[in-house]
Image 1 (cartoon, helix red, strand yellow):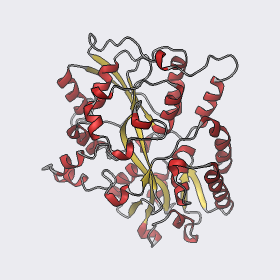
Image 2 (cartoon, helix red, strand yellow):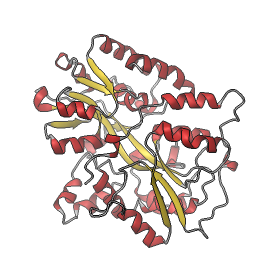
Image 3 (tube, rainbow, N blue to C red):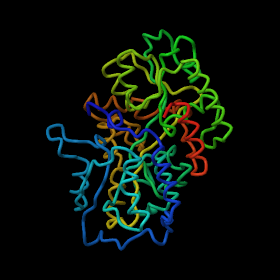
Image 4 (cartoon, rainbow, N blue to C red):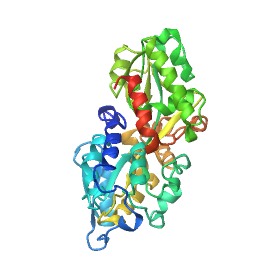
Amino acid sequence: MAELSRRALLRGMGGISTAGALVSVAGCGVPAAYVAPADRGARDRSGRERRLTFANWPLYIDVDDDDPRRRPTLEAFEKRTGISVTYTEEINDNDEFFGKISPSLMNHQPTGRDLIVISDWMGARYVRLGWVQEMDRAAQPHVARNLDPLLRTPHFDPGRRHSVPWQSGITGIAYNRRKLGREIRHTSDLWRDDLRGRVTLFAGLDEAFGMLMQGNGADITRWTEDDFEKLIKQLRSLVGKKHIRRFTGNDYIKDLSSGDVLAAQAYSGDVIQLRADNPDIEFVVPEEGAELWAESLMIPNLAAHKRNAEQLIDHYYRPEVAADLAAWVNYVCPVPAARDILAASKDKERAELAENPLIFPDDTMRERLATTRDITPKERTAFAKEWNSVVGL
């Protein structure tokens, strides 16, 4: 198992710099950013060039226990198909990577990458701008058959025509039950007096607001401006009372581990790792609900090896391959059928993963998970300004 989760080390803080980038695209004589469907594809060289380039985040794929330079699931794909994969761990932040490849995409130039992994809140912008290609689902039978129904219809990409989840996760609440001395079952439990100054929330707008809105009873699949303003008013009051210790990135992990905070907005994948060191840390999906998110595979415009990329995506939706990946990265697996593969393992630790609800949510938990409607470009500027004024960015 990886000693540190990828998300625990590297996570974008929200859409601040990207919002500015999108505004600049639209003004001052810069060519229009949107790319029409007819201009997105290139002549596919997959047939004569059995290769592809895959850009991902660090610590986000399985590696060999004895040789970390080897990636068994990728090697299995190369052996089965004869397609070689150039794998790069170059995505450290959604905004940073957006800035890196956006000049090529907006100017109708290839990025040099056939496959990328982007957080869905950011992927929504790629789809709106027409910067990623529609996939041939007929060439991806395992995706069509095995993709988790909860992840099939995000607001930004109905039917997942332009994106396929690489891994998924839950934004919920982590807390130290022993030190707090009580259970947390509702988001509103965070606002009780015994947690004053001992609770943290995420600083990033896109990372934080969905679960918090659910705590107020909102349907995050179709939240409204009124829902957002209600949340902002609530947070202003809590900040004014010094109830919230601070707004964080992934440094909430240190705060929980040290005991400086007793409860925090948290990612499910991180808590699996935290519990290995401190079994008093618990993760809860509030009864009002929690946000289910994904980071997804996308094929950028003018990719030279689109069919090869589609084959690689489908490879990771084979249940046995998805099981190997899930056993390493410990996020919510987007292939529920992988659970049976792990459960049948003769390795005890591997088999136990099949019963972990933070990798394979049980039916009760699944009923409380929802995917947040993304923030539209029209909404983003004003909402980000309000959000940043509350969290101090």
